[in-house]
Amino acid sequence: MTPSRTRPSRSEAEAAVRTLIEWAGDDPDREGLLETPGRVVRAYEELFSGYESDPREYLERTFEEVAGYDELVVLRDIRVVSFCEHHMLPFLGKAHVGYLPSDRVVGISKLARVVHGFARRLQIQEKLTSEIAGAIHDILQPRGVGVVIVSEHSCMTMRGVNTPGSRLTTSSLTGVIRDDPRTRQEFLEFVRNG
Image 1: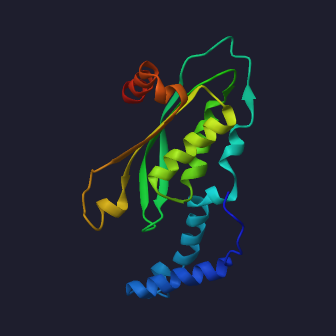
Image 2: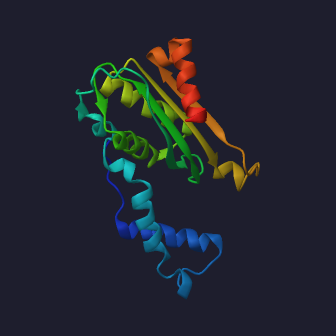
């Protein structure tokens, strides 16, 4: 969670959107744009909801009755929707998250919630990847964690260098998933092929 700051009011946020509409060269009072400031603020409330909670808290409820299960747990294809902190444009993709439990597991939906919680903030993909892996490593204390994110960044595909279809891949590996070549290969194989 970020340090608390005094946030602008909803009306101040809507006024800022009106200003951007005017700056872009349009009339915020025309029929099609009258409700746009309110819509944008409501959309941003959802898109930046990661500031409202600590994603690490999703990992606090675990299960120890695993019947001796000690192999990789991998959840693939978690949708990532985040915003580049440099241009405030979206980057969209998929996260693949895995860990090698030591003595407990977490409900799989919690892994997706951790991804969403960190993604719903202004981010860079490298930091996002590291934050997800760090939270799982710190809270679950597994023998290893692997996180791979592949996404397309609008700041590159629709402006600037204009390279549609290019994707960025980042990874963060800890413990035996990083250090043991066989475990690392197994995790990456799960990511590639399921």
